[in-house]
Length: 75
Image (spheres, helix red, strand yellow):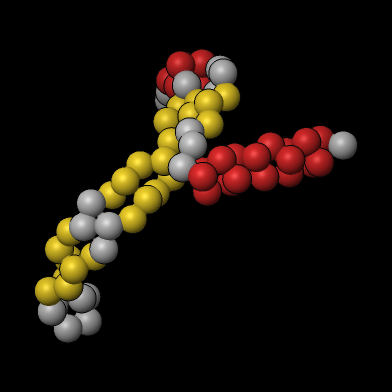
């Protein structure tokens, strides 16, 4: 049962990101769609300069509760 809920949630996040929408889960975090600008890079094998095209990327920003839980367990 829990697996179906998680699968459904992931499907909703994927569909929303595909449309360019952000998804926020209260107490957990947010999946944000960002535009990455075109930039210059290097081909690792040849050292030749290449242009890396602009594209959209999905980033995760942890919510306050999740970040606090991580910071409480510092060693």
